[in-house]
Amino acid sequence: MNHQMEVVVSAEDIQKRVRTLATEIETYYAGESVVCVCVLKGAFLFFADLMRCLKNGPEMDFVRLSSYGSGTNRGKEVHFTKDMEVPVQDKHVLLIEDIVDSGRSVEFLKHVIEKRGPQSLKVCALVDKQERREIDLSVDFVGFDLTGKGFLVGYGLDYAEKYRELDALYEVINP
Image: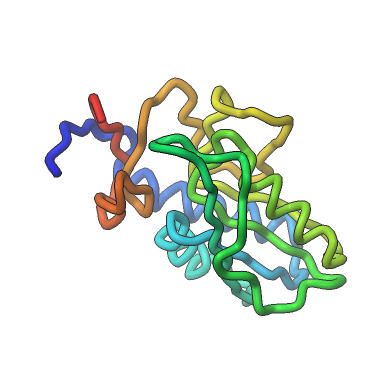
């Protein structure tokens, strides 16, 4: 699989922004403990780098979702394939996503977690693509607003399970 790709965000710029996001998150929570929840698979590299930058000793957990649809389109029905293991009642929870586009997966996760009684629930995403939003949803901590960019890969984001290992974000030209 050889696709023509163009760098959108360099590895250096990603690492700088991750450090800045960590500072923003620590400032927001002001010493409070927080459960950081990685949405697999796409957010794993972002999550790992962000967790290493946080100094407040967050609890960590993971979820994995699947969307059922046809062809290359994601469906509107979302299901867990791996649920959280850490209890979140009366705790601050921060969902860590790779990319928020339609917003359906994040909306689903927020609904599920809110039923578990967290003290607060916020969303952090490496990439926010608001022009693709199908629902009214905002991201609390945004790495990069890449509105207007096409299909993105690298730094955890994939095309048919390829390109996750790349250390920068790329736009695939003619996927």
